[in-house]
Image (cartoon, rainbow, N blue to C red; front, side):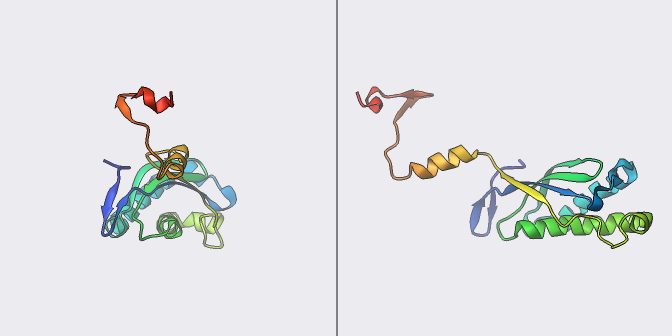
Length: 157
């Protein structure tokens, strides 16, 4: 199932990140459904080309008029910057080849994407869970009798 822990050569885990990146100058190029479709196809082609090598999966895609939202998972041997470079680079090449008028009218410098991007890590547990887990290492755990029940001696009575 997508979003679950994956086994890599010497590690086990899930690296899942939401990535957002915008079209340069915020041109609303994805208002054209042909451009939007080609961009989505390009992201899928990137996964086919690099997915097995780096464990790349796109769990969710969303395209607005001038920017893209992706929920992406990949293995620990590849940096976030490299994943963004692969996705943005192939997409720009494919879209600008398919629609050369965009390069002439909107992206005369040859770059379709703004160099910036936004990312947010995510996973199956929230930050509070991780903070509590780390903070409580080495401390005795509260014994649990059943679902949600603690022994009376856990209350220090």
